[in-house]
Length: 335
Image 1 (cartoon, rainbow, N blue to C red):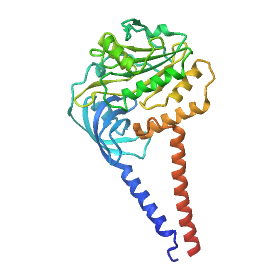
Image 2: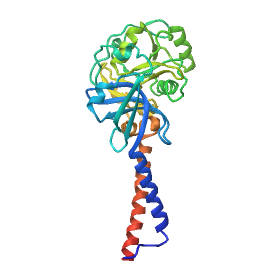
Image 3: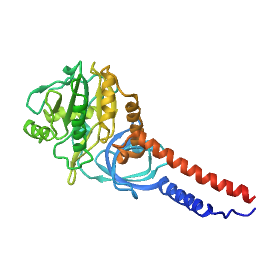
Image 4: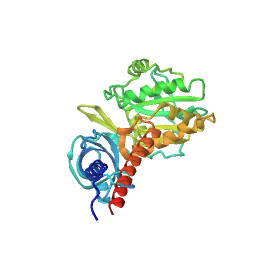
């Protein structure tokens, strides 16, 4: 049988070679990064990794192929590992830890009870940007959207993005039973006057949006209960994990969103649904798709519509299917 040499052969073959090369490059690569958090129970680790090929450095959750690695590595260490991108989430194999990069702060070693979906927001003794007391347990009757930031964050993809999205949420949820809360991860520096200046920058209305601090140990204990950790970094100020929380009117935690780039329309729709108000099912589905995309691809796709992500995947598979179809036709005709 002669090999097909029609006008579609060269571009189709080139496309397949590029796809094969890309698949091979993505299937296994080396990863170097800083461990932010380890969960031995699920054999996972949150790692802020260096750029991998054309993918920029970011913070992602990885599966650990060896249960031993989950007990051996610890937060604050740099690691090198073989990266397997064929699994979901991506898997780290052959993990080698280095000397600790930084002495982990208390958030990594705090003995706290983690909060799970369905748990109620705990009693807190925080103060807001006005120096007024804030007890999250006393916000019953309102849907609470809560996240973690620090005012000296210079990365526009992190805390400033979250606060900008909170400003958009403040407008979208105006007049309803909603309250926004941002908890500082830098409670020693972020005292009420600092938080007040930061709040003014983003147009926060204290009646609907609280930026809170408090006793540093209490604040970091609270963050640790949500699996949010942070420690000093010479370049970033603080390296920390991201988590946005939605609690319903009964104070029960209903959603964890583990990305910094969620879209305000998505979260506003979720908040309205928990308040018993009309909410867009399209936006709710879009949020779910975004969460799945970030779980697979990391924060490189954060802030992008999940529907858009799905459309891109469908188009790519359609193009691949078309290339394979043309190749198959060429083989049949030449047979």
